Length: 206
Image 1 (cartoon, rainbow, N blue to C red):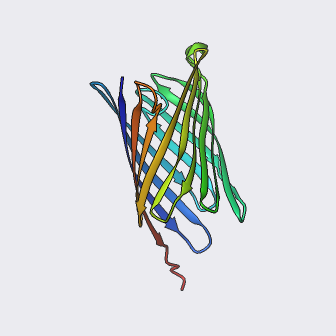
Image 2 (cartoon, helix red, strand yellow):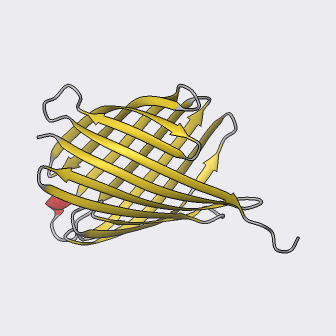
Image 3 (cartoon, one colour):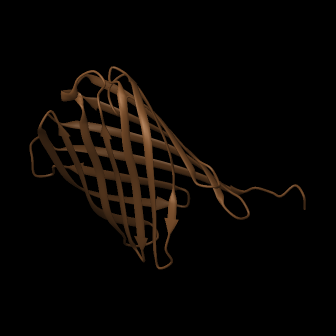
């Protein structure tokens, strides 16, 4: 069965004099046949790198998830960041979780991964492990391409979904297209739309 997922995200980046705070609002629209699901996500990061996420319908259907952690950034030529988090989900799925967001850039190459393990408080068989990974290359200031992979381990069954991606960006707007399982009959597409607004915060003491 073919599936399509439309991702529309709005990112507001606040740049201070020494560091930046970031607020990201995302809305994921998932459609499978006649079923449609909206998955809103809010990500917040303070200028001292404390990070928090609030998700609904993302980790599981009709489930609210909250994550918190702190981002570590390092590097010069190779820039990377790691954000370990603890979380909890409540709704149709209940239980604690651990997660790690990681990304790295080197010249025109970029890597990204989101990994999590959700432990069900209702039944051990409902616990699951999930990761989304990307490896891409910036062809130019406007175009980028790469490969992606989703891996899910649930109820003793492994689901591996490889894919390819490509996109373009104009100023603060970017559009990404993901095609998962391109050689299979049940291939599906994820479209990502991202808009970023950034500005400097004025110092009132000057």
